[in-house]
Amino acid sequence: MTIDTLTPGVIAQTSAATVSLLPLLARFSLRVGETERAALAKAIGLDLPLKTGARAKAGGVEVLCLGPDEWVLITDDAPRLRDACAGIQRQAPHSLVEISDRELSFLIEGPKAAELLTLGCPRNIDRIADGEGRRTVFDGATVILWRDGANRFRFDVSRSFAPHIVALLETGCAELGAEYSD
Amino acid sequence: MLLIHCPYCDETLPELEFTYAGEAHIARPANPSEASDEDWEKFLFIRTNARGPHFERWRHIHGCGRFFNALRDTVSDKFLATYRAGAPRPDLDSVKKAAE
Ligand SMILES: [Zn+2]
Image (cartoon, rainbow over all chains, first blue to last red; front, top):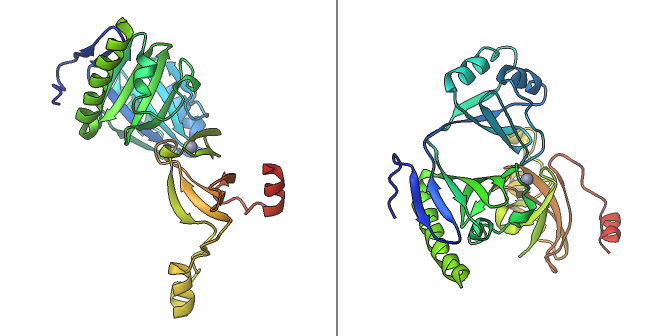
């Protein structure tokens, strides 16, 4: 299927779940070692969570820990984040790469949102607590899942995989919707 | 489906998030130009092909991205242990005992 990536809005909707495309946002990938971590956290203005899947949010920056030395950051002020990190590059070497355009972000919500994700995700979704996130797999493609509530998820998908993933979610929405209305 | 414990995420997760990466604890010769053809061949191609417990590398590719080592029984396909890359080989007997 084709997705109009410039027009956020509802893509699929049934009584089971609603899938919508979120507006474009500024996203960064941060890689930093143990010794430089504290300096980075200070420059960004929030503590970098250390456990895979843990999240933090402060001063317009939201961060998710993807692995032992890797984080993804979402910010509403990209120039400020870039400047803050560039300012300490010499004292605390690190890698901050803008990846805003690498993925599309979707919102999945509704009474069967978690069940809809099990269509492509082999993980036990219930083991991801509200307010956590994970990098995982969805029908063969790497995705980043943010759980914002029991029935509310954000879902980052690489652009090239998005048509396939969205088509699957659309089918799933219809299927679960048909089951759910009975 | 196999469930694999990632020693970095400290979670036991479905096999689909992981990828196999060959036998573990294969050290590259420190100075390849001094290695004999036989030694180089051994390093590149010769593997244990174990029937039973096998030390092997795995990668949590759709997760934290880390390589780690595992001890898996190639007959039963059972994972006896997983441990971080760089950690020493665990003692086979004590791992087996713990798994029983
Ligand atoms: Zn992991």
